[in-house]
Image 1 (cartoon, rainbow, N blue to C red):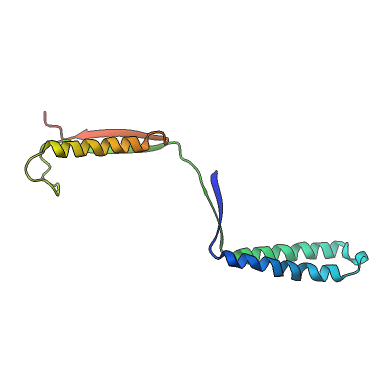
Image 2: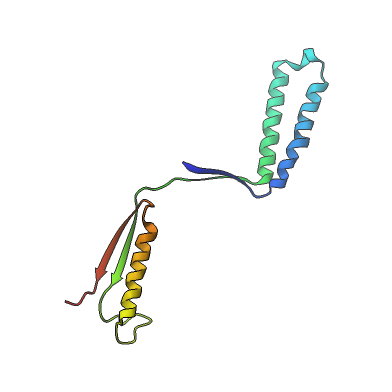
Length: 130
């Protein structure tokens, strides 16, 4: 797990934690010291604090995001090298050297872009007239 991020859609609601903490702890500290440390008071204080934190984080729209890198990504480039591409939108009856350069540049750009990013690349050609 990498790039763990906590995001808030409404971060201004987090400011409600301040008055929530006040209203949670104020009654606790108004008690005499000998009554504060009972099991019921501590349990109540902890549960009230947890409920307040969860409710305010829900209002703030808290989301957790992370990415898990996949080291087995594969890219397969299918290249048409035939001399007649009848279904091609830009086919005008002949293959020029410029179109071949564009095709080769595209393939090399994809290979260069994926270099060093844990990709396996395969180039499959079809339609070569023999």
